[in-house]
Image 1 (tube, rainbow, N blue to C red):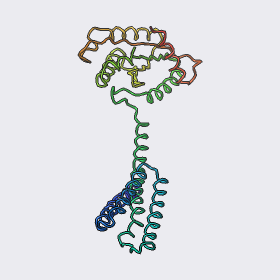
Image 2: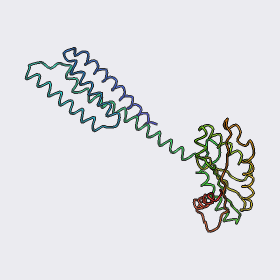
Image 3: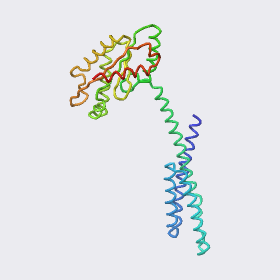
Image 4: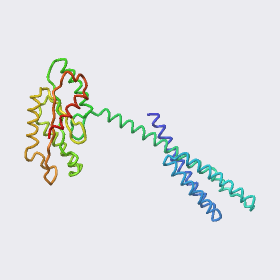
Amino acid sequence: MANKRNEILIQDVGLLLFIISLICSMGVLYAGGSALLVENSIMLFVTVVEIILVTYSMDFAAFVVIGSQIICYSVYKLFILYEKGMPISIYSFAWLILPIVIVGAMKLFISGRNRLEMENSILRQQMEELVMIDPLTGLYNLRSFYYDIDKQIRYTRRNQLPLTLMIIKLRYAQELRKILSRKNFDKLKQRLAEIIGDAIRVEDNQYSIDDDGSLAIILTCDEKGGELVRNRIRAMVGEKGAFDGITDTSIKVEVQIAYMQYREEMGNDTALFKQSVEKELQYDV
C-alpha cells in the first residue's frame, strides 16, 4: 500500500509539474510580444510534438527532437546576436529548459500510470485464475471441471466405481451467434443450462466449458446410465416451447451429445478423457 501511495504521489507530481510548465510556456509565448511571436510559436509547436511522441512511448524520438530543438534554437539566437547585434531576450532562455521539464513531467506521469495499469492487469489476471464459477450460467467453469474430474477419477479408480463424462455442444453455435444478439445468445445459453440441470440428478455435476454454451457433466453411472441421460436431455431440449422468449422470431435449437465411460487405460490423464469424449461428438449427426 505504501508503494502504491508513492506511485500515485509521483504520478500527481508529474501531472502538476506538466501543467505548470505548460502554463509557463504559454506565458512566454504572450510575454515575448509580437517580435518573438513566430519563434516562440515554433518552439511551442515543437514541444507539443515532443509531448505527443512521449505519450505514445516514443521516448527516444522525443528526446532526440528535444536535443535538436535546443541546439538549433541556441545556434539561431547566437547567430542573430553576433550577425545582427540583436540582444537575446530573457524569455528566450526559457526555451532551453521548458521542453526538457515539460516532456520529463509528462514521462513521469505516464510512467506512474503505466505501473498502476500493469499492477491492475496482473491483479485482474490473478482474480480470473481464482474464479471457479461461470458468471453467466452460475455453473462451475472449465478450471473447476479439470479440478473435479481429476479427483473423481482417483476416487473411481480407488473404489472401482463407474464414471461417465458427457459433453453437450450447441449444434450450429456460430450461426446462432450471427442470428441472435449477444444478449439473446446469453439467454439461450442460460436456458440450455437450466434445461440440462433439470434433466440430471443432483449428485451429477454440470460445468460450463466454453463461451459457445458447451457443457460437461460428470455422471456417476456407466454407459447405460449415460444413454438414459442423453435421451432425457434430447427429449427436454426438443420440447415445444423449450426456448420460447429468447427472441421474437422462432429458432430451432439442436445439441450434439457424446459420452464415454472412464477406462482404466486412461490413467489420470483428464485431458485425454475429455478429448476422447469430444471426438465422439463428430459421430452425433
